[in-house]
Image (spheres, one colour):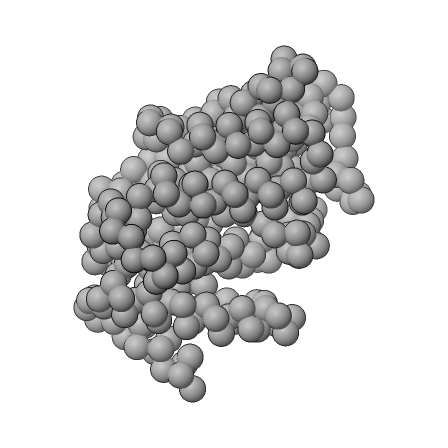
Length: 294
């Protein structure tokens, strides 16, 4: 009953365009997420898809956000560990390269001019410390399949064309992000998140590089998330099967529902783990903005 009461209180506040205090919002978000996690543990992860949306809206309506660099510092420890587990990466050079990728994302200054070409540069940074750095940033020249699936990826000879076709879509997403920075709206924020996820699915389907596609494309999505101050997301090893299943349905069957739900949850997970818990326990005051009304 307490969970439903908290959810109702938050929704009423959002509908009325009224104000929660930062402390109230953090407490309610933590409570909602705790209930949602319990459903996940009971194999009912997507039993109520509305809750992640409520959490995201409440966070961006009422909670003061921390310095992004602090979030990335905490994120890197979790992300690099989990990415290596997900992708079964053992090369120390690639592990350090992934850290360099997120140093790059953290210090990226020209956020309003993110383009499809930044994905190639991210891939270049990923392999910059390996014995063959020239592998980085180059499109594959051989056809490929996703391991363990029957999904057909883009033909190697068509990669350049398909990547160029995505330039206007990336530009439109960035334009939307800039508009959100200047005129914030939580409904539009959810649309922005979903467009970033859908772009990610298209990039995975193209699979432009010989290796490192998952790490590079997820990093590129996190760069787009940073444009609107969304904490970067990471996938835990225990979520690997759910992630691959959702991605398979998205790029194999064209059913985006599971991957959208998956990432809505992961954004909430990052909000809780990289900000709410830290703030509730440590109460650091390195905020970069004030809560924004809808």
